[in-house]
Length: 358
Image 1 (cartoon, rainbow, N blue to C red):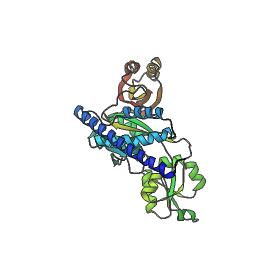
Image 2: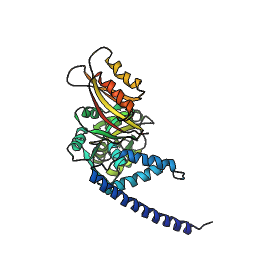
Image 3: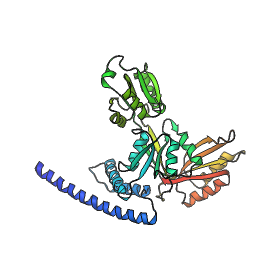
């Protein structure tokens, strides 16, 4: 049996080979970046990145898990992409929010992540060219759609470039000594959505605390760090950022609690074969209008995954509908369905076709 030293020496040689191959990959990526720059093409290609990760997971024979392979190569892709261009990403902040974590997962630590105060500010930063892309929340699996994001698409010309889902795990943060002392905690800082997602746990364990709503989970952690006898509901990342103790983990009421995020930009990605398309439209006010807009999806065998309505804010009881369905706008079936849909709509706008999450 090989000695421990021999095994470690073998690992060291493998690590040197890995480093050499990674830098070879980096040089190839730099060359590709020069070609992209010459042709005016984007360095962020979610369809290519997704197909790369899927292929590597199919080829994986272990002992590394598929998730581990994806995590490792995500970081490699992010680092290599930064050799082509250091992207500037606007996200709904501040740091340590779940949108910040989504931006990190999509673009990595190599990108310049810039916090924005509102969803409208994220859209504005990208529209004015001060950011290459933006990351915004669109819906939560338990609390529903984020209406501010839907509303921004009504006026904006930006496209949806990618989507991602993030598991939302909430933590109770504070100071261990205060929390363990009877009567040592008096206030709970929380964003209203985080509180709603942890309502049962809070009522069972902290029913006597004064609730203070904050603009974000990160702000809740910051306020708890500055306020004596206070705790917060926030992310694990916020505990590290503000120097707080994790007092309780995974306090969300729903076991499967996810938030879907969108990457927005000016360029739409190419077709992958496993895509989703988002559209918005308003219908003419007549009997059977809503039925008529559903017919083209059924006729052309398109799977609708979401439909939401929002008031137009122009006239009472007029609505704009937002729909997600599987397929790419370049697909023949999709084009025929959109042509049929357009005949029943007052207006129709395609928000983007992009690789769908698995």
